[in-house]
Image (tube, rainbow, N blue to C red; front, side, top):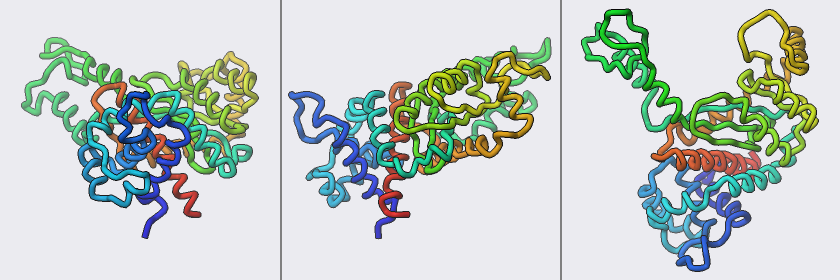
Length: 334
């Protein structure tokens, strides 16, 4: 018996979404063996299972009924899937798909009662457990371990006269290459209304404008909540004065002080937070963290792509797959 999030349901839902957004082929000189919608459905199935391209090809070969559901007689080659991944996914098509998915959830968004929640997370560049990374840092940072230490990778300060120098070059390189995903989530149903992907672990504040604007275009947003990483006077003005959206963000950016912030809206936030006036609305910010947890538990916390550009597209595909899985749950009535 098929469950609400069975791979066959995900495959069919992705195919229907692709047919409404994607063109049939890349150009008029294409071989026309497969359409973009069919290849997109296969890529969504790959993300659902967390497989490689070769294993996805073998899975489709062993499932002729799944191929028949999306109008295929033979499974696409793994090289075809690899090329389709780069050709299909771009920012314009990604945003159009998110807009179409938001329209399908119009009744369940309930943004007049529940706020829009913003948050960001980072993915691992390769499959390495947190325990393994922690042990590597301990081995590199402890001279008593008996392991020769590379000064370039040292994480702890070194006293004058001891071997090694204090540098964090390795850590800086890791952060500059970290894949980062920021999302705007409807708290009532965990649907992602807007997402932004980039490489590098920097401040969240510059992402606020794009996330709120795209979500605001797709649904009637009344309240937006975000953590202190998005705090800035400019972001409050964008939300409240330009879009008419009530923004709730703790005034936590900057050096700790007892003085109230100088900006109008940040000072307003600081006064309200002392009275705990917005704690019920701000508590819904945890729903965005729940969405990040759902994506990482269902599709993995590590990316399989090798280059930054393809890692960003892989994060886009994971966002779409997450929404497709929610759509399958909605259609099944659960």
